[in-house]
Amino acid sequence: MKLSILMPVYNERTVVERCISLVLSAPLPENMERELIIVDDRSTDGTYEILERLAAAHPEIRLFRHEVNRGKGAAVRTAIGKATGEFSLIQDADLEYDPSEYPQLLRPLLNGHADAVFGSRYLAGEQTRVLLFWHSMLNKGLTLISNMFCNLNLTDMETCYKVFRTDLLKSIPIRSDRFGFEPEITMKCAKRMLRVYEVPISYHGRTYEEGKKIGWRDGLKALAVILKFWLIDDLYTAPYGRGALNNLTGTPQYVSWLARLLRPHLGDTVLELGAGIGTVSGRLMGRRLLYVASEKDPLHLHALRNRFLRTPNVRVRKIDPAAPADFEDLGESFDTVLCLNVLEYLDQPDRTIASIHHTLKDGGVLVVLVPQCPRLYGAVDRFMGHKRRFHGAEVIRLLESNGFRVERTHNLNKAGTLPWWFFSRVLGRGRINKLTLKVFDKTVWLWRRIDPLLPWPGLSFVAVARKI
Image 1 (cartoon, rainbow, N blue to C red):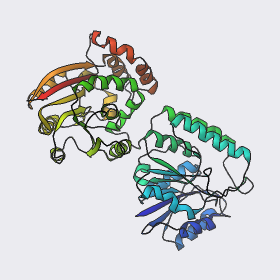
Image 2: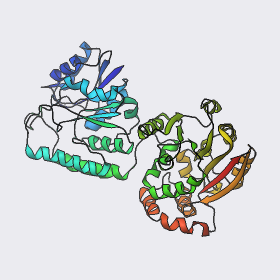
Image 3: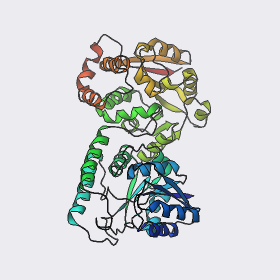
Image 4: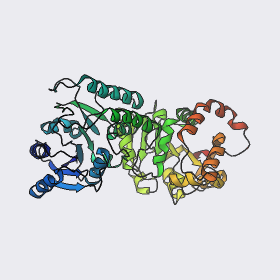
């Protein structure tokens, strides 16, 4: 097991050698190795020459340098890309934070309780240098505002000491180049529903005369970062497939509409394929004896395990809908299988329907939801990774040819057909903007009632079929 220590450095020649010495000698849990990844952000005071000498003397150090000064966030982003450990810890080079506290920062991660740990300067229990009142008020004010927008209850959002599971950290895009890194990563941890813990740390802060760099302008920029990433769902380093379905978390009324449609068809035991981050699962799993939320994507599996960690009737399983062996490994049959927004990603949907048939009990029910109307296929579908959109009749034939009797069909969300066509086919955009989604969601109460009256096909097609 290895810890990657990520150290951005800029013009710290008076303290950097002492800081690195403390980092390299800091205690670590048993059998844990360390690597120190240093990114010099184009220092001009002789710092880089000191770093070169230290890197030559210590094989644990991996040294990189920016060609131009880009800011702390950019340096951290570079370091993240170079990390090879299971865990990554951010360490400033200014001696304000004490590396001897690494074990307590790592403990919630090693115990399996956390995905990210923040070291708080404001939790009781550790010594802290008394500093300027207004600087502390600025930190606490930014933390309060961040908490209001991301719905966490942190005491210290602006802390340097943040430790992550490296696989998760690498999957989060970092856009801020300067000190906006702190509110950005906090907002994205909240939106990704990572398990965030805080532990108390000591703090030996510097004054501006001693070299502190962050100022009130950075505080104003942090407010803008909080607002920006509250509005924008920029959560994955690469937009892929079902990751785009996270937008559903911002449309709770639409999810309620969908859940109301699905709920009457659920039995006591349910298997949901392609559960994503559990948006629909969370609405349907109540009162079921067993609800299996399945995914093939490791990041979504992680989100599901976090969400249902203490929900005894929900199990999380890795199932690739295109792999028949994954269904066989379940070792049990279900009253209901939900296949929602899955078939459009597959090369051979009929193989998945056949696997579902074997998974259902005799007389069990399959509920399929797919995007409808091939003429609507456009930029949004391509961005989401859709291979096709379906005709309703095509779905019915697919089900009947694999041993099902279709009992009911629904044209769902006719109100969404025109906006989808406009954004995807006319504007050629890969996403529908958040404002449009919010307006739609706030008016779902109306669209739900007039949907049956509209004369064109729905954006989605739902089929309820029984195994025969």
